[in-house]
Length: 249
Image (cartoon, rainbow, N blue to C red; front, side, top):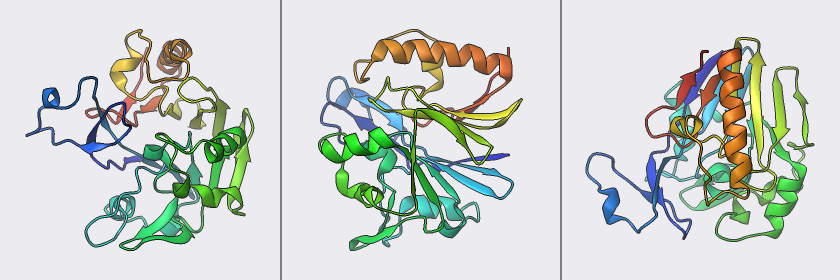
């Protein structure tokens, strides 16, 4: 199994929910608004046999030539948008669902960004997000999923194609979902925004930005212990230093 980080860069974000690019070499976090968080935005591609599995889709930014950044990131690894077989969506906040739809220099094309993929999202997350446009949910980014034949709605827990397990956790957002790919000691865990950074796995704290911060804290502790016992490879969507981490007891 191969895990490829698809970093879109570092950003600060505050109560406005606006992602402001941050250069770690030259910018000063202290000059940003009080309470700003420094995060990476980092989808992942997991390749397992014939499956090319995309974990969330990033911000959906386009480069100066009009190409979507996530497509350029994939191309660096020799992967085309048509190669993606699964898009797993933990939730539909703008930094995770911005690349659901295809864009060019003029804007949305009216198509899915990954034409051969099945898109998986929790049924209640999609319904909730469509009804709650605002700072966190940018409905035009993902509204195509409402009626797309490529969309598959997830229940609270289950298995996809025998190699992907999923579970609705809530905690960060009301219907947030996490995923495990693979089996045994070759298991990749994607905790998305309930487990966004390595340092958060190692200390107990309640985040104010979570829907249920106490539950997030408890889940991180549980997953950290399980991961060490079962040798999971953790993927961290918002970690500016450590995109993946192989746990060991």
